[in-house]
Image (cartoon, rainbow, N blue to C red; front, side):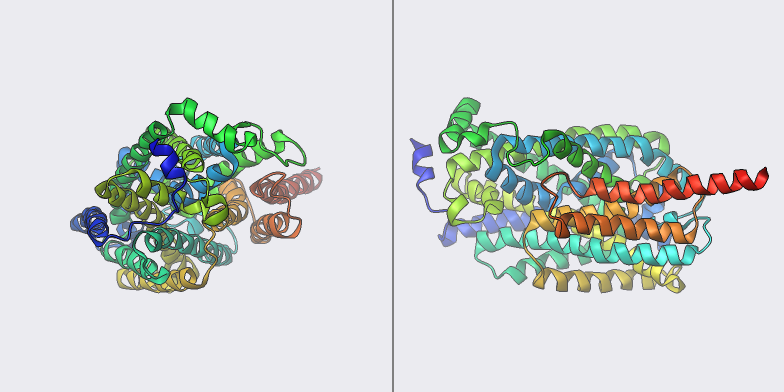
Length: 491
């Protein structure tokens, strides 16, 4: 009977001051522990740009795995993906499976070589790696740095916005206050410890993410009456919620599923994750790190799907009288004791911060190392660059669109389409010139933008697929024409 009472409840957080105080104490306590991990890591920091940007390439595979997991999943998991499952039901599983396959392939095929080549060429940033040994390297670095600053900055802002959305519901705070809190935490440890502090805190945040999601998932399934009760509840609300095949797919399931596989493969264009591959202590440990990351990422993703579907049964009114992206914090409030509500909120906030801090550091590197290389060797200017980027991201978060799912997936798509094909070419050590490199980036991003915003075809297949294919075709056509020219000349 508890379930039926909850279903009739209006989704608002407890107004009782004593309850909110206990939630706040737990929330602040967990965040304090996370920040202390980052502050402690500063004792291991060396005052060099190499250590600030890549932790002197000495990160062990377990820390790499958990950092990559928490950085990659972020607010998209806790808010966007939960909200997606809430709205469409079990068919959301294909997004998770497709993304996981593509992500695994991207790491498996290219991250070991990325680690090897980046060390051999002494490149500390993604833009420098893209520009290595190329004529016009300065322009490749600048343009790719500009792309990173624009799209990764928007991505980071969406993460701060995601955490703030949850806190504004939990405590009735003004939206901007949550953004300010997130920025303050990022500055504390990023400014002091660089990527080492970032990775250490990511690992701590991942523990909070996994434990909080599994706790809520377990309680929610029990509240629904087990998996059978969940299934029957969704079928009662809308039979389509238990249909494994997504609806309204113009070209059918295959292009839709392949699109999400390629979207996951777009990890090869994400600087905040590529940096983890460059910072690991040995190329030989990449596969170990990948397998650890893949396992816990799947645990998190399936738990998020379960939470989203359970929330649809327990809190169906969110569909018409609320925000499905806030299903998780509302569900936590309904089902968990106050202490665990604080844990849940800390998990959400930790997920958003773990991505935002990584992205801010990557944007800082793009600004000070690639766009304005005169500051590249100055440890002081690199740290000031972090403050400047944080201020930019803070401003975007305050005025930008607050739809987490759209902002994250679109920023991911633009980076994957613009940088991914070029990174593959550089990892494979294939020749390229300035014009083709810039054309690949421009055509890739332009195609993704056109597919998503102009043609409105993202419902057919994710825009990363045509974006990366277009960028790859530019290089393929040039390579064929170049070989023919060389062959004709030699004859």
